[in-house]
Figure 1: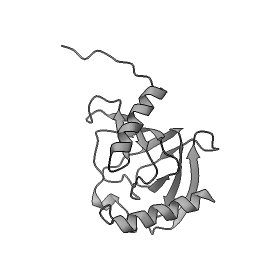
Figure 2: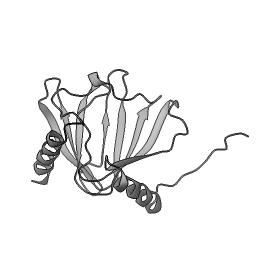
Figure 3: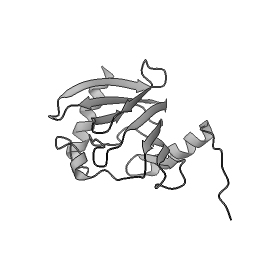
Figure 4: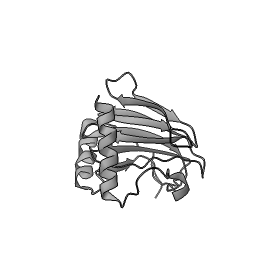
Length: 163
C-alpha cells in the first residue's frame, strides 16, 4: 500500500476539535500535525492553546532550527529576549492585530503567553523533530514542575500584555 497525497483544510471544525482536546489536556494545549512523520524535513502543525498554558522561554540552537508562526485564531503575547534574559521586544500577535505572525531564527530566545482561549497557531519548523533540550530552555524561566512559580510567571506576562 502506498501513501497517497492528502489535502487537509484548516477550518473551524478542525480547530474546534483540537481545541476540545486541548481543554482536556493538563498542559492546556494540543498539537495537530500535518506532517506524516516527525522525521520529515519540514514539520507543519497547529498548536491550539488555552489561557494558562505554559511554554518556557526557549530557543532552538542545538540543533539549530528556525520557526515561523502565524496566529490563525485568538491572541498571544510574544516576547524576544537577549542571552542575559533582558527583553528585546514584545508584541501582541493574533488574528485582527497589527502583527499576525513571526519568523524566528535559530538561537533566538522567545516565549509566549496565551491571551485568549482557543488560540490557534500554525507553525512551520525545520525537521526532523528534536525535543527542546535543557540548554535550550532559559535559566530565568520557571521549571514546568514548579507550579507556583509557573502560575506567577504566566500571570505577570498576561498582565503585561493586557495593558
